[in-house]
Image (tube, rainbow, N blue to C red; front, side):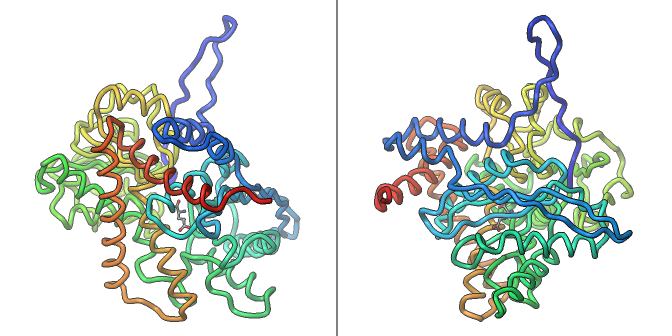
Length: 434
Ligand code: GLU
């Protein structure tokens, strides 16, 4: 899952060489909001309000390690906006998790749910912890304690967590169990991304990668290209990257390079993505596959391909490497893989960038289907999930395409315009209380 850290560009201040901090998610998110607001006739008070989360819960999560010692971690849940429905968004377990990162990511969830026209607002949370450094039972204790600390602010009509980096369906099953035990009844709708046996949805795990593939297919068609003549490089081979690569390969594209944290494999004639284990199937298994060439992650990002899918972590395309990107089109698989400065470079270079809040929104869309199934106590077939996902993705794609064609803007701006207009309209209709 995690890929190489971006190289922090260096900056000269007061005659000294200072390493520049990578741009924080909240800074990027605020700049994107401000830009989109500039295209719309929105009450500036609503925009100001949307720059800030409704609330951020910071909690202490102590656990007993297997050796009997106690270790204390810090967890967060940022709830950005709920004007369109309950807060919704993932929980990540990663050493780099901070309050600000959660706030930025919670803002993206508000737009992601709005662009998909889902009846949800935006939230994000996590714990600053390296989940690989914990045993399974330590992870379980951590999750159960975190659930207890968040119990008063989550719930199926309040805030519904889901998996994100470093968490998985098992994490969601523990969370759902801990919450249900405290409530005295089974509440499957408190989280999504659970295993299907406890109310999870078929197709949920593959959904973000599936939506990346669907949007890639539509973009290729929009630019009057042929998927059968399209080469693709995928950075990150977790559930998003692997599922996107496999579907695009099924639909005729040629996946020439994929990578994990250790580096990339490359075959100009095309790899077989189904034979390459994803991070979940075999962690760090990409480099163990036979391929004519190996590359570094940085080299993969600069390959001359038709489509580049950064699907690992945030801030991998920066002002340092954006001038050297040779792909014709970029589809964001990860959340926030491109810094604001890099985005401007791509706009100047006329490289279309399809943003995360549209491309990987299949995850939260199938989370919505899961929530509906939980409320109705009725499971859908995989076929129904995939059909309805296709319908929702095409509807969102059409809305974004119409906004793109109506104005002289980037794809990111067009996507934000669709999302922000919906959120602002809902704020307008509801007004300020009291
Ligand atoms: N963590 C995922 C995302 O970033 C999914 C969130 C959800 O399903 O609520 O979109």
